[in-house]
Image (cartoon, rainbow, N blue to C red; front, top):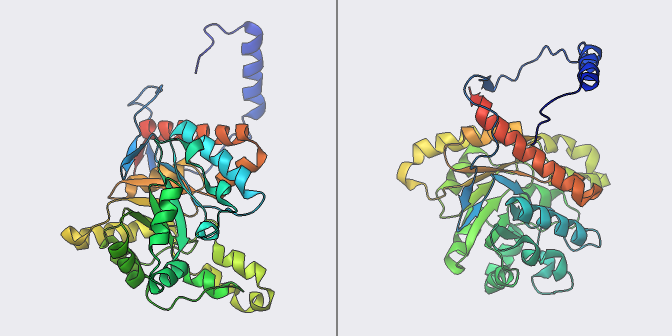
Length: 339
């Protein structure tokens, strides 16, 4: 950012008056106890290498646009805006559930983002565990590989959502442990697999078992962000009064980082998964920086609702939000140390 070399007397006078006017409003009694603030050690950075590897792709920044939606009239334009931003800044991106295009290409254009995203950034298709269970039972897992291929995706996200399906009026109940299904899937198709939740996160035993699988990454989708179980309960009026407390079940991203680090220590060479996407309640770059720094394996942070909110405004608003994340991460990297 270019600085003005010489400030006029009038501009300086206005700036100082602003300082006086805002002094009382600027007082703060709180401090962020997650960090040590170290102002003595670095200058203002112009840029910094924050790139991170995910599979065979290198992201320029450790930021993931989390899975949202597709197959509606509004979804296509929003997905394309998100892909443009991911391409511009080198973010990774997960598609919303691709179930609707497994066998019918009516809505394919909503999901066909590789031409917009470009080849450099990771893009992942997304199918639910209940659908994968049925495809395995029918001997049709080749449809999943075909889905990945036609989207020119880097792999498949498997979203594990038993609580959502249980609360959904049209929900598909799963018949087996998701671990059994994912192990079968790994044996039947050759593609990168990411396993994610949809708003409750994973408890310590689930985290431990996932880390033992040869999957590319675990996407937390922790309690605290967009909660698809809550979304379904809002659609299911007869159950709403009886199951509202169920929505509080699950684990925060902070808890899950602790589960992750403990399991890494305990598993040793048994661990096969080497990446995580920390998502669910990540409100800003400070949350992202703190949690990815605390994780003991390579980590990126994901957001869904904040990106969607700005995409609903305009492409310019979305890009501005992305730049704020990047500049904030750069500041944090230079001046903040994790406690």
